[in-house]
Image (tube, rainbow, N blue to C red; front, side, top):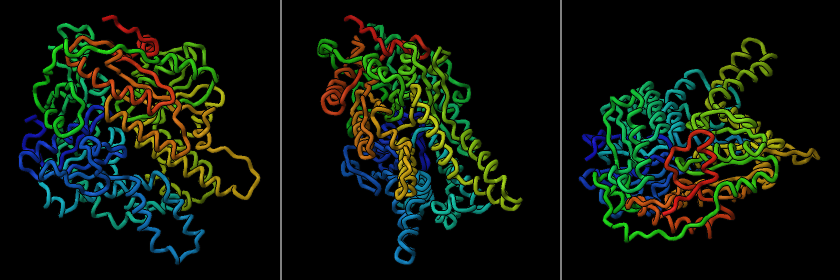
Amino acid sequence: MPRFLEQPPIFLFFTGKGGVGKTSLACASAVSLADAGQRVLLVSTDPASNVGQVFGLDIGNRITAMPAVPRLAALEIDPQAAAQAYRDRIVGPVRGLLPDDVVRGIEEQLSGACTTEIAAFDEFTALLTSDTLTADYDHIIFDTAPTGHTIRLLQLPGAWSGFLETGKGDASCLGPLAGLDKQRAQYQAAVAALADPARTRLVLVARAQGATLREAARTHEELAAIGLTRQCLVINGVLPADEARVDPLAAAICAREEAALQAMPDALRALPRDLIALKAFNLVGLDALRHLLDAAAAPAATIGDLALPDFDAPVLSQLVDDLARAGHGLIMLMGKGGVGKTTLAAAVAVELATRGHEVHLTTSDPAAHLAETLNGALPHLTVDRIDPHAETARYRQHVLDTKGAKLDAPGRAMLEEDLRSPCTEEIAVFQAFSRVIREAAHKFVVMDTAPTGHTLLLLDATGAYHREIARQLATSEVHFTTPMMQLQDPARTKVLLVTLAETTPVLEAANLQADLRRAGIEPWAWIINNCVAASRPVSTLLRQRALNEAREIDAVAHRHAQRYAVVPLLATEPVGVTRLLALSHPVTPAR
C-alpha cells in the first residue's frame, strides 16, 4: 500500500501538471480502496476528463456504478452540461414572460466560458458539502484539472464569497452570477472542507523531471497558503534502474531522472513521498489499474520476443518546411496535458526563427514555462505569455482610464466594484488572445495552448464574441473579421494536434479534432511526441512500450491525420535551442 493511501480521509485530491498520471493514479486508488471494502466515489473535475476511457465505460455527468468493481462509482463533471443546466435554471422562469429578444440577450450573456466555470464550480462544491454523498461513500476521490486551473478552482470559494460580500456590480456579470448569492452557505462549507486536514488530503503528482517537480513545489506552496496543508507527493513513471544496464537510452533517462530527484525543491522534501515505477503496459482497463500501484515493474518477456519493426515516418522539420512557405500566420499547438505542447511549440518557433522568419512564441497555459524550455535568446524570436493576472490588471486599468474617467466618485466606485468580478479575467484573457491573433498577419505567431478542455473554453468565448458581433452587424454593410473567423481560415491558422503514441492521448486528440471541426476549425497536422519506437531502444521495458505504440501510430497516420510527424524520445531533456533543434532533425540510432 503506497503511503498516500494510508489512513485516507474522506476527500482525496489528485493534482499536478498535465500528463503526469493524475487520472491513472486516481482511478487505481479508487479501485484499490473499493477492493479493500470501502465505498468509493471517483469524480473528475477536468473539462477533458478521460476517466471513462480508462475504465472502458461511458460515465458522463451522472453517478455511475462500476459493474466490475463492487462499491465503486464514478462521475465526470461535464462543464457544458452543467452550464446548460445553470442557464435553464436562470432563463426558464422568464421564458414566455419577457420578449423573445430579451430572452435571447440573456442567453447570449450566459454563453461564455465564465458561466461554464461557475456552473462546474457549483457542482464541485455541492459534492464537497453533500450530506447524502458523505453518508453514502467512505471516500470521494477527485481527479482534478491540470495545475494552473485547479489552483484557480480551489481559490474560487474564497473569491466568490468575497465578491458576494461586496455585491455583484452591474451588468457585465449579472447573468452568470445571478444564482450565486443563494449558494453562499454552500461555498463557505466547501472552504471549510478543503481546509480541514481530517477531511481532505492533497496528492501532488509529478514526474522525475525538473519542470514538473518545480511545478509541484509551486502548487504545494500556493495550496498550503489557502489552507490545504495535508499534502503528499507521488513521483510517477520512474524508469527502473535495471533497465539502464544494456541500453544507452535507458541509462540516460535513469541518470536525468536521478539528477532531477536530487535537485528536488526543498519545499517538497518534507512531504511524505511515493515512487511509482514506469510500467510496460498502457494504463487502460481494470487489470492495468490493479497493477499500477505494484512495487515491481519487471516485464516477463525477453528481448528476443520483442523484435521491433522497421520504422520510417515524417519528422518535424518536414512539417515546418510546409509551414514556412506562407511566411507568416498563426500556428496553434493543442492537445491533452503532458503530451509536450510547450516543448514542441518552442521547437517549431526555434526552427522557423533559425530560417530567418520573425516569430512570436507565446502561451495561454497558466502552468507553462516557455522561458525555461527555451533557456536562452535567439535572433528573430520573441517570447512571452498571456498572464491572466497581468492581463486582468491591464484591462481593469484601461476601463478605469476610459469609461471611469467620465464618472463621478460614486459611479467610479461602482465601476471598480464591477471590475472585481471573477468574470473580468475571462474578458481580459480573450482580449489578449485576440491581440496575439492579429499579429499573425505579418509574422509567425506560435501559440502553446492550455490543455484541451480549457482551450475549448477559450474558443467558446471566441465563438460567443463572434456571434454577438455578427448579430449586431447583421443588418449593416460593415465588413468585419472576428478572431473566430481567422481561426477557421486555413490560410491564416494552422492547428497542430500533439499526442503521445498511447491509447488515451490519441483518443483525446481525436475527440478534440471532432470538437474543432464542429467549430469550423480543421486541424492541419498531428505530431506524435516522445515516440519510443522511433528511438530504437534496447531495454526490454522500453521495447514493450515501443511495440504498444505501433497500433496508435498507425491510427494517427491512416485514420486521423491529414499529415503527421513523429518526434522520438531523446536521451537528453529537450531544453535549450540546440536540443530543441534536435527534435526537428532527429538522428535515429542504429541497432
